[in-house]
Image 1 (cartoon, rainbow, N blue to C red):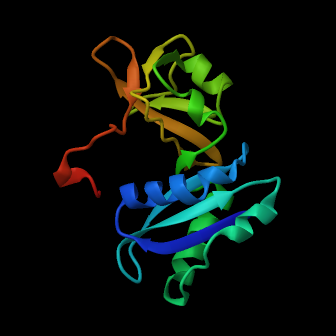
Image 2: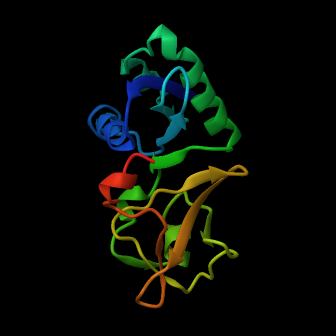
Amino acid sequence: MILGLSLGHRTVREAEHWLATHVTPLGLPDLVACTHLVATPYPHVALSVAVPAAADRLAELPATPPELHEAAERAAAEHAAGRSGRAVRYPGVDRMVGTLTVGEVLAGSAIERVVVLGSAAAGPDLPLDTRDLVRPEWRDGELVLVAMPHYTGGLAPFEVPDPTPCCADH
């Protein structure tokens, strides 16, 4: 079951905070929750929440306001198709801390592929400095982490933990 929610969050940070306080406490280990940037009826962040088991627990979440139904439905459809969505919660996210090899990331989480920005898939022995923020995205039916070269010689996720304020909402 994939539930689309659109509650009018204006920023990714607001949406992630809402997920952390309302969805994460449900304690569902196979949960995959994503953020989706939407433009209509106004720019905001919609959410998609997928949980194969114990889906009845999602009934505790609030309903999407009528004017945002289309955005919620689109977020759920994109997640279901594996076309888009930035995963905030997913199996193994709690283990994505410190420096891990790409192979450890793939073996220890729902992430299926790590790609280097502008390049091909990363080799399993490359170190990845997670910076304690690993947000893969749906691409062609797979959860893919986009990484970039890191000054240590390995990789780091492309998304930085504390973006500069001018770019924080893009």
